[in-house]
Length: 411
Image (cartoon, rainbow, N blue to C red; front, top):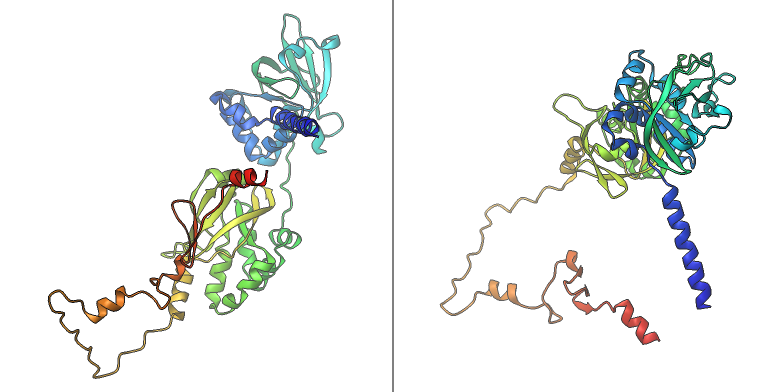
């Protein structure tokens, strides 16, 4: 029995280490080489980096910053840029050794551009040729077979998992560089389909939807309370003025696109669609381990899911309604009961002066124990952790028995 358990444990450990060994992160690999920072940046904003990291076997043909300058001069949209860079990611492993030992001297390989379905015919394939003199050239299939880029060096290899190589020039492809329209994304439709229907309906009914829609083109991040969260908030919402309702809704939109990676790396204040004049209507983004929290000083919400993340739009689900401190601090003060005025003519009874060596009645009362013989405690302190690891509940000490001691007693 023990031998079987040990064997099972060993197998699980082997699987864990095998999975860890096969995992790769293209962003971290290229971050160690500043000369590829531009290429790395566009892999991130086009979301190709995430696609690359999900593949078990992949080859990335990176172009240095000088080579990327030629591509940037064409002023392509981010969607077209994604197609061009996808042509530089092969769906097979090509390390330096394999490149120089291509059977027959030439081979055709599929790329991630071909896998998107945007490529016409064979335009998503790249021809790799082992040229005389030890050079290896690359040519997109729809570029008349012209070898316009060559292998320079290996950046990193993990056989037969990922190969990141440096090539001399961008792979030029008429099909990949063809103008690509932005995907049609309707903010409220996305919310309705993925658990935020109530918030989407509220945006429409309060005529706040137009502000969100008009902001998408320039970049927009929306934090959407789930249906059950918004339902609990509605009694408070209905007590707000029309201007207050609009401010709360617009407070959930940020006029900048933020991927989850950006939220985790760009902690700090964020302006919202509600920002106006002296009323800042901002909140703070802060990491908490793997979680992302949004702090308004009136409430702290946690991002609980991603509804869509396609630049220029990102929509995230949150577990609480965001309450702007400019608005809800005032509401709390208005609802707080005013202290009752003191009766007219009432005078405070003077304390009797204690003689030397005696204590006053007030001091005796303050030091006297409660009816049960124990001193009064603050209710908030009824449950607290002592320094020795015990738990105190209403004045009773309860020691936590160590797990190891319990196990020994059981045996």
